[in-house]
Structure formats: C-alpha cells, structure tokens
Length: 279
Ligand code: GUN
Image (cartoon, rainbow, N blue to C red):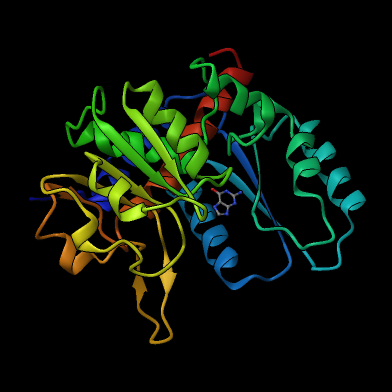
C-alpha cells in the first residue's frame, strides 16, 4: 500500500520551477484577488502567495472588501489584463453572492487564466488540446504520473461535478485513457458505482463521506476534500483510516492534493509567462 505524498511531490515541482525561474530574464508575476473575508479563502490565498515567494515569482495580493461591486471587480481585472508585469490572474472563489462568478471568470484574458476556468481554456481541455489546465485536476494527474499510475484503460469514478474540480478532473482522466463515470448528488447507488472503480477521485466536501466498504480492493483513491471538523482537525472526503487497509494507493489529508494545487498554480503561472514572452 502506497500513501501518495503530495507534499513531497509538490516540493520537487517547486524546486524545478525555482531552478527554471533563476535562468529567466524576467520573473513570472501572479495577481491573486480575494473579495471579502472567507476564512478558508484567506488561508488558500496566503499559501498561494507563499508559494510564489518560494519559487521566485513576483506576486501581488489584492484584497477587496465584501461590498465591492461587480463593476469594480471587472475594472480591476481589466487593469490586470493590461498590466505587462502580470502573467497570471487568479480570483479566489467563492465570490460574494451579488457578483456573477461566470462574468468575472470570462473577463480574465485566457492567456493569463492560470486557474484554467475560462471557457476557452475549459473548451480546449474538453477537446484534448489544453494549454492552461485547472490546477487541482492537473495536480492530481501529476501525482498519478509521479506515482507511476497510468489511468489508461482503468475505470475511474469522480465523485463531484463542480466546474473547479469534478468536471475538469473527469476530462483529464478521459484524456489519459480512463473510462470515466461522473457521480453527483442525484447519482443512484453511489457505493455500487464506487465499487466498480480502479481509481476514485472524491471531491464532495463532506468529511469522511466515502466509506472503506464502498472501495474495490486494490483501488487507487484520490481525496480532494479539505474539511475542518469542529475539533479543528482537517479531514478528507474519504474515511482514510479504514480505507488505507483496502486500497493500493491513497492520498492523505492534509499533505495530499492540497499542496499539489498550489504547486500546479505555480507551474501554470510559469507556463503563462512563457506563452506571453514566446519562450
Ligand atoms: N476555490 C477553491 N478552489 C479554488 C481554485 O482552485 N481556484 C480559485 N480561484 N478558487 C478556488
């Protein structure tokens, strides 16, 4: 049984990025926008900024209060689209309810869309001709690759159909040759579907939702969930302690997918910098 060490893989990725950056004439620049003061978002944004510092990127963190209007946010994005020093623009989600998330994402110049959420980048992924790919799913693919797990020909079940994780994750696995089932809140017999899977990706946001007796013996389990319990403990969407006795490989929480998302954001920012400078 292998515990897939996302922390270690992410450190290796960051070292490789830092090395490449040290040889560049100009540094990649990332702008991270946070609207409001969602506690989890604050932590994620700080980690993203810390990641930038580790690899030698320029980063700017832009905090706007909860009452920022959609128009103001769109103007800010426009300014960053036109800023030559900025290669990547990331708007931390979720946004306050009075702001139309779709409009905001589509205002970002696709070449600077390091989240890969713009319809142009999502469309390219769907057509198996991607450029900037959503960070968490791309990070999962890197973890599988670095763990010598090839999804080609395997049956994969993705639990969760969000635009950020579930959908692009399913397409990544399809592009890698897996046979993919996407499960969601209306799926019938979820345990039965999971039982058929060689690879399970859980992205539901419910603590310890996936039970060990749903899993096929020898399967590979990727846990995207980061759930904070009332006790303060961080747990995933999978009941790790029970599942680890059934599976061949599993990602822990914390130290699994989380650090990979940040490292992949840095990879994407470097890629955007190279696209923009025709390197
Ligand atoms: N909120 C949760 N995950 C993400 C992510 O990958 N990118 C952004 N922008 N917001 C998020």
